[in-house]
Length: 503
Image (tube, rainbow, N blue to C red):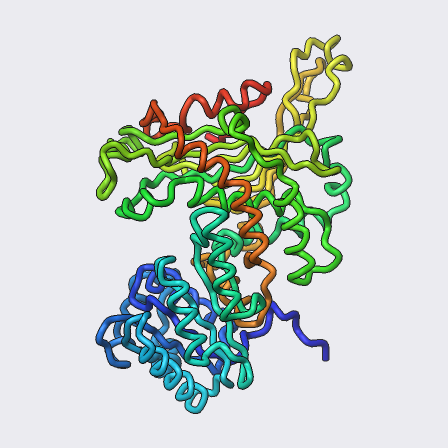
């Protein structure tokens, strides 16, 4: 009998250790994701959850907290019978992350889980904590001997932000390497867990009609947009330290760009895929200070209207400085200098409080020769465009031209659409399910490698340096509910192009 693909089998027996067990990420995303994996038959039966926090909770109190989080944040109704199977597998360890005694107690909890719940000594450590805690936790695990793999595998999942610039990211990589092997580190980016993102490689490499024209000869330019309607939602302290470039462009957007621009990997193995993605990042032309001034745009939202409701400007948000220089919008023109893409600009943008929530990749093809249709009175032809919609819709659309029925030649735009709703829709999910499952089976394809992180920061850091040296003089420079600052449209207009906004 043929074995099922790795992605279709349950994860390996393991203990799932959550540092920051009572935080928003754990409650809103991780615990509901684990429950969804159980409903999908992908959570191992021999499994345990070990929550680690500073709260003085015993196992029973933490189980009640987990149950409450599921009932509040689960994307599907909680089945009491199913949940009761796992409730007894939930445990809590109280302690400070810098206290060696905390890790002794974690070691005891792992031994208990292996004996009582059959976790086989495997442990997945998820750092759902502020970045300042990453090194403390990994050093503590190492000093307690909890990262050795003599009795089972041990893996560490690290959330973004992974560093603040190239120097800090490289320093963090070096420090982690003194304690844990690179193969044990899973740097997570939840955007890569979305179905449409995962479908990009299949779409490109399994369809012979696209790959032959996926290059500079046929493609005019590429756009990547991550637009949000929301503001900072009470996270002013974090956002003041991050900004749109660090928060979205350096990780999410550059990862989407690599999937569009990469060469076909030799296999679908993790290292083959990640090698090709890294080559793309290393091929992006570094920006000089003059390039930054010419080819980047930053913005900050002022007050405006969304859904008919007036919303405050960024500087009026809680925990935000009234003179803040933090950008809530960033747009860049990037050049991928390799044989496939040389001369094809990649325009990327991310922003908060924009007109609508919209994450999409748009590939615009070159304009066809017009002379053929001029005699029929056709004034211009819009180029064909391929839109890969990631959220809120998950779909792929191709914009084409066809003749309108009638005696004369009149061109009519038509769209060929594919939506995941055509498969009966996607089960409600958090976006973390695939990534957590991959970590449990040891598939690192969708996770960042150390050299990928540093290559991304090499692109972003020169922009950050110029922006920090030259404070913006026009903030706020776009109204909430708009599509961003006018200078972002001018960035493309200088090249005779425009953003592919969907109304």
